Length: 110
Image 1 (cartoon, rainbow, N blue to C red):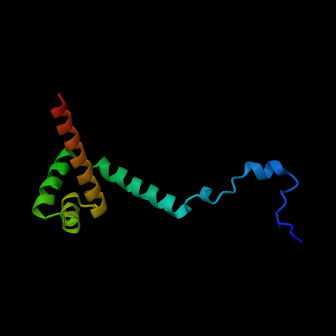
Image 2 (spheres, one colour; image 1 turned 45 degrees about the horizontal axis):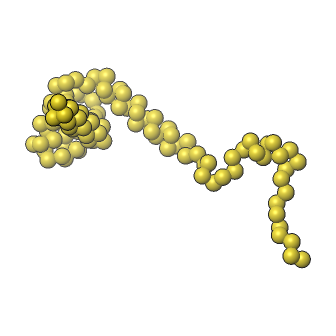
Image 3 (cartoon, rainbow, N blue to C red; image 1 turned 135 degrees about the vertical axis):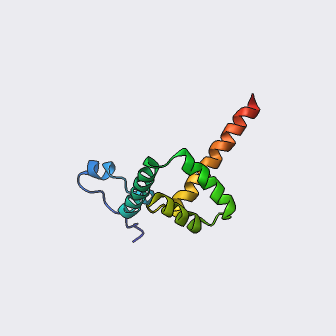
């Protein structure tokens, strides 16, 4: 009457041990992996046609358009004759800012 209800291991306990049954082992959904790879694919395709001049224009437009990524995106779409997403531009701007701060930090260490 005081017995605990303990589940029994399967007959072949090696199968049970080889499988991770912890809740933290749940993998992310396939759609989130696919979405990430789509974002990366779009970025790679855009970067193939991206130039130093585009970086300079981006930096100027960020200042003149006060970080309005949709407006900046429309300006690039006209110039490049293809869609450049606001997300890409914001990410690219952040990368450039990080590169500049890294370069400045490198110069001050010497």
